[in-house]
Image (tube, rainbow over all chains, first blue to last red; front, side, top):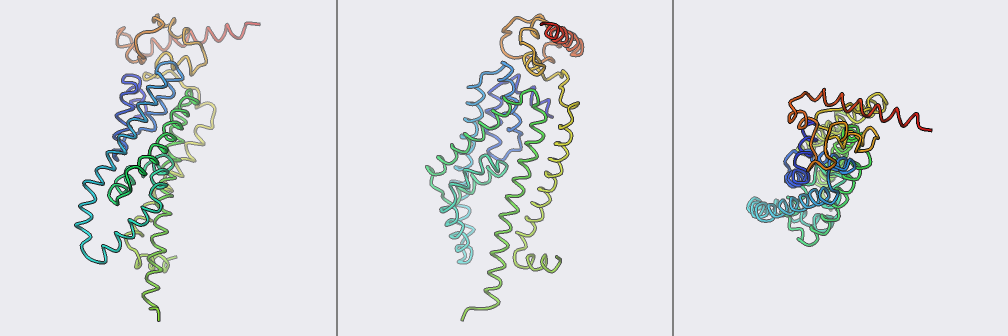
Length: 204
Length: 119
């Protein structure tokens, strides 16, 4: 598996990095981080040009995120409108929109690099709940810049231990994403428990 | 523990299921992280043997010898028009990757021996 990725990167260079970066931002399970690591390693070895690897990864990621956002905006938003026809659902939707409006920018920012496996879903949600395009784009570009720099940089710096870096980093990223979802569910459950208690002891 | 689980299950069943899944995923990656950490901490695992996906330039970088040493050992021009893997080179010449790898390894060993004897 790892060997196939490396061979693909040597044969197709920045093109395959661009394509995988784009597709993985649309939630397709493609090991783009491994591609960027190997891209950085081949830059260190003198086989690929640095600007091509950076441009491929960065361009693919931003175009992919924009596509995810637009799918949410033009596909997800009308669907949610239709589902939320009862007053109760409407209230939930309004609350979700408020959260996104308050914290959405930071959510997009961190989901592009620190919690990268959640990125595509955050893009859909941002588009669906109506996060402004400019705000989305600014945070997204900032985050993707960090993502690309960190991975290509690590590939470059640890070129001779690329397999070790990809194994360890891959696990760390998976762990972070798992913990982020765990934390989010904790917040959700706490809210639900509070609501239950409020119903059990109605206010005077 | 069990009463608590029952309470959160009644309050938010969907969130409870996702919570369980997320905890399982976190545990899996935590174990994997520790396992890889222990594996790669062993210096014996760090020497990268020559493999088909590697390019001559990458091998030279990985073994700490100049690029030219690897290119000369394989009779390659200095800039062969885009990177090529050992697999491609072997296929082109109708030999196995092992044959090429042995030639290259010999050149690397010679170069390193020369470096060591230099005052």
